[in-house]
Length: 114
Length: 109
Image (cartoon, rainbow over all chains, first blue to last red; front, top):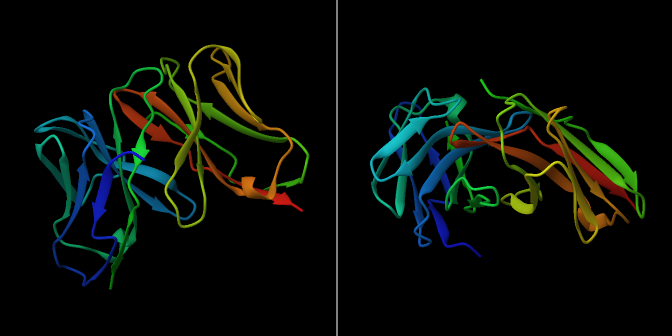
């Protein structure tokens, strides 16, 4: 299995509080991604990174920020959590965007905002 | 906005039959295409990738790509109950990986 770890695995937080999810990899892969998965919506890209300090927005980036200060860590922050951000969050990594470079996924983080 | 479209299902297929899953994509410049399987409560895992027009076979799975029609499919032969899962189509475009919403497949014993 690819070395990718998400923390925490489960979290319940109150509306309006900041929340940070962590993704850690031991594969030295260049690309890291944060997705959220909701019923009826599949996997939607929040933000992604193509190198240290190089990040870009995905299709559902509003209300989220990211940081990547080291190759191995990619942090997702909800500045002020809302109930609409209740979801399962997946981190993924890939070595590059070559023709056969698959994305490997973490175990997921189930976030509930009450 | 680049899009990847899949029928959400559920698609019900008798055990032993062929399951056919379809995906269309909007970015004509897309180069690589992936099929992932996701069991309930689990992370997606790669089944196959394809980047050349035509068919690619791996065991009971065959991926088919038609770039002119912007269409990629996955066939599962001799379907087993363990194939019951959600199947996600993914495309690399604009330096990011975009997923479809997934198709739920149910294999009937």
